[in-house]
Length: 240
Image 1: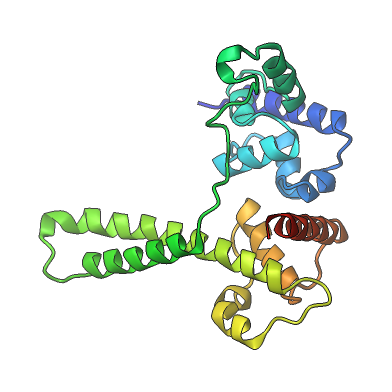
Image 2: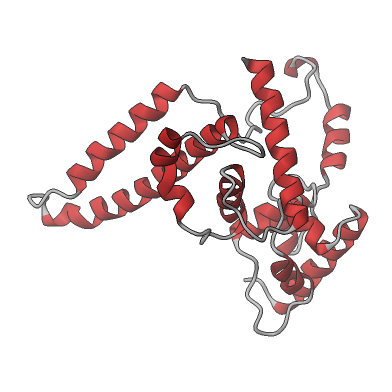
């Protein structure tokens, strides 16, 4: 259980690390962290302040340059691990058995997929949805089928959003007009105002920025999107 004392301690740790990184609260958000309001609640919790969510803790790890899981550990009374400290520790413990790299082979967060694999996954999900909606499903299996359908729908939606982001990064951006064929294909994703929170909301805003339909964005966030887009174009040019 996260007590008030633990939340206050966590708030001090977050504020000290933010200062150490030379970031304001808007700067944390621009770096991919929680919103300014969320940062204020974290750093100055009140008696009725709820503990940060799992997603918020992940965003803090990213923006404050902590190793994965550090914010969660700090909230529970432990100490966070700075990425610079983790790098030094890894370099100091490089062994011949690790091939001299000192890297965790399971420490990656992203996997590149062939577009055919994405299409196959979406097609398989559609078949699963049809199966879960069958009226002749045994009564004992209906609750499990409903839960599986909901979980699969969330995963497929995130996959479709990632594919849309990839398309928009290649076809959109400042100075580019989205082709009508692409606009029709992913128009639903762009027409709905951003409703998610955390990193998912930022990704929604990023797609709208790429399509030229984002309005009233914070200048710092727009600059962050511009850097993200240019970095992506650089990676595309290197790969292709």
